[in-house]
Length: 446
Image (tube, rainbow, N blue to C red; front, side, top):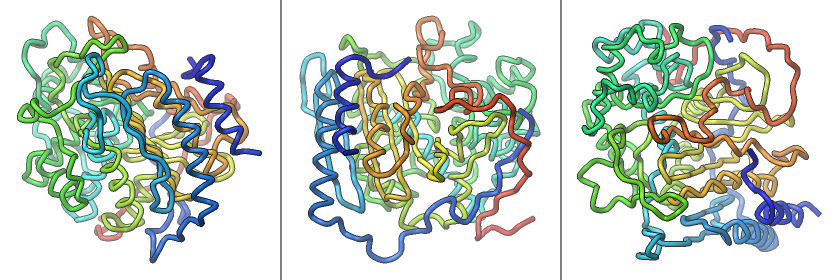
């Protein structure tokens, strides 16, 4: 289903018109040009005409999109310059109470996975774990020996989504469940095909279970609670002062989310599980995160190449998933790195154009699905849509169950990454990719 219809679609399309006058496989080996090398020296400053051009078009694009029901924040930047930044709405849109501002932190939903993934890769880079290790090495009692850290990171573990199987009748839904509860359920129901497909590394299946377990592995290896590890490793060094991992202690300050009608979502039994979600942040802090990943401050190029490589090639298509990042392989050789999120009324998107050093961030808490249409602005910076009308904006990363535990609309992106390609493609499958083990430069090869 298209994200934009009628007037909204025409408005966004007009904005860009103005500017334009199957089987077990590992990732293919990333080439040396898979990502940009860490930024060296000073980034070229935008000229006055460039700044005026980018800012005018970005403003026209988002002012049109935000003219609707949007309640949230947006930031667009290029070459270290913020082109557009806007806060529209209220912490409580139903009663129009407390205006949003630069310090209002939103629940990032699945965008949180980028932090969990990079936290895991930081431990790998530091030699404290190997992403090729089996999960059972770190989580006692884990029943599937073929599932590795890497298959959790790239969603090829074969584990199904806990948001679905934890809705079974034998789960106490009056209790706020933890990551440990998810692990114990997996151990107890190890033979249940609703929990595990039976084969690891066969195909892509987007599953929050993977990242809930990764958070536990981070805790096991680092000796710190996941919220504290994230703060010490990323949030504090990067001066992300408005970013935190939600716990019950944050209940008073955490902004809740809302249905389209304005009715607030109530806290439910899965809301304390983290790793897959539960990072709260602002557009300014997310921009600091984006920049730190570009400038070599945190990671070597080898680790970033592994994070931004594609790992699922059962079917041809442009969509793929790396280690904590969604991506589009564009026919002209470009690669668009991004991640969406959807949990309750929180809808979020982080879009990173590495070649152009450009970033788009949009956060919303009132179930405003049009935030995903922000990808349409990518053509202002580079030829990403290749003449096509749009990207697959229906891909929302939702894990939010509807009444009775049934998936909500938009949750059908759990089969393979190429199941809904941007353009038509031959039915024939790609040949199996050569199996490659990625190694960070600082890690010793076995």
